Length: 198
Image (cartoon, rainbow, N blue to C red; front, side, top):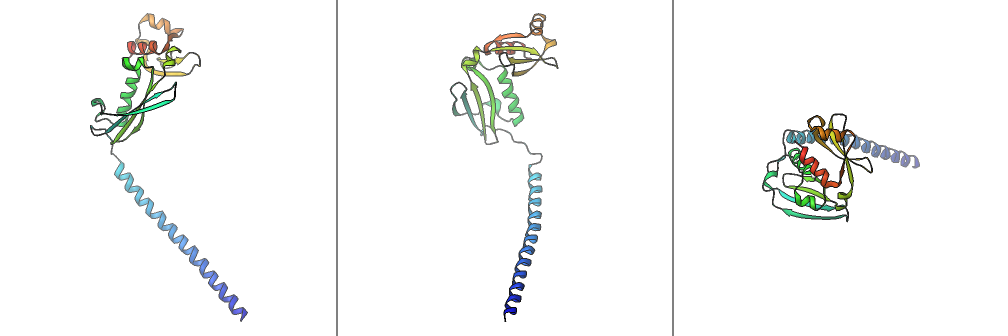
C-alpha cells in the first residue's frame, strides 16, 4: 500500500512539474509574439509624424532666480512667433533670444533661456536670472574653428559659444581678441553679442 502512495505521489508531482514548465514555455512564446507586433504598430504610427505648436498650445513660462533658488511659473497666451513650430525650431528661437535678450530681462539679471517640456498641447520654457552674475568677469576668445567663445574668467569654463567668426570682425576687435577680450559682467557680454552677431 505504501508503494502505491509513493508511486501516485511521484506521478502527480511529475505531472505538476511538466504542466508548470509546459505552460511557462507556452506563455513565454506568446509573450514574445505580442509585444513585437505592437512595437511595429507603434513605430509605423509614429514614423514621419512631427509635433507642432498651435495657438491652442498651453504656454507656461517659468522664472528661476539662481541667487535665491526660487522658481515661479505663469500660464501665458501663446506668442505668435512660437505658433506652428517643431521642437527644433522652438529651440532655435530660444537660442537666438538667449544671445540678445530684451532690456527688461537684462536689467533683471537674465542668464539663460531653456525648453523644459514640449508637446502639441503644452510647452514649458524657463528663463533663469541671477543679478550677481552681472559682476562676474568674462572673456571672449577664439576657438579652433575660428568662432568666438565666451568664458567665465575665474573658472575658465565656457559660458556660451557663439556664431560669431573671428575673420568677420573689425580689425580693432580682432586685436583685442588675440589676447582675450575682457568683458565686465553680463551687460558687456550681451552688448558684445548684440553688436557682432549676424
